[in-house]
Image (cartoon, rainbow, N blue to C red; front, side, top):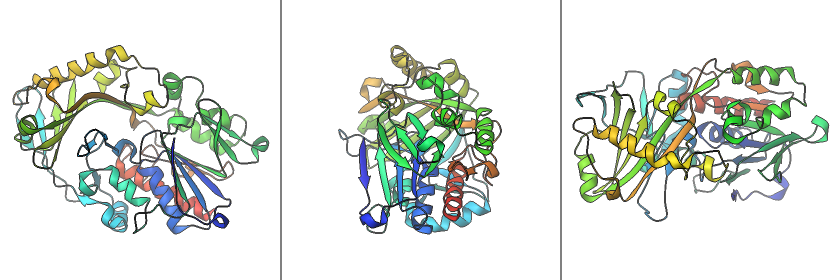
Length: 407
């Protein structure tokens, strides 16, 4: 577990403390809202994240072996479409950049591409240097690049157990897979529904940690929130990550687009081309939802769920699925046909099992359970933005931070 702390005087690191599980855009926006707007309400804020850094589904894959490599393996950009989001966008300042990539729609049978226009009321953004994770990273820091006062980050850290100390009246106690305590807090912020959703059982085994904890509290509002979350499902996606240089990269860059939605194809739904420097290029293939559902139980050996969470995964099928997705790509006319051994990095398989929520959004009036001291934020919570979107997660995090700060 990598822990980074802001330089905060000991006198300021007193209760109330806030634990945020997940450092995607929802968790980060909740943390920054509290740290900047309500420092007196949350003098100690800890972000627990299973991944190696901030960003969540909008993370950027890096490797020390290739310093120039950066792969936006979930979302290479975000669209901001609501009036509320447009207004809030101005507060992010240098944390975002306009997304200038060419977007197209590709026919999966003919390979023909047509332009995909943006609507008049949407703004497309990405992070500095084209890395989406930099948006979340910048939101956690001050103008000098230091963590905002009061914020602590705990990366490569998975919360496997949650209890309430003192028979339900004390602090939340967080523990790891060995049942060792890793933190305490007065408020618990659930940024992403993982620890609260029944799908936890199929992935990690046992009851979802927050469901177990709630059974001991007898809090009607929290129970109602969990019941709504349990009705939600998710649209999973399998991705294949690749990084190319020189002649291989040139073949991808010569296609002339950056974000291609694929129609009429049974396996592939999207291809993302992310140029870097003069002769480098990252490529991410996204599967259809149906293909991902047909191949449940495979997460990718390098994924955080497998590395940190010990998610049950059929590793023997990883290369099979990679080969199937590359073969599917080769079946589309005009797409490059490149041997996987020619890539400088990858191909690697990654599964977004909790990627796009479906079903009833968690109502705003259930998103902050003041008596239980639990707040929910993420793209599964109702906001002015569409459910499942980056904007939805961002706005819900802001709202959670504001409501905790005012409680």
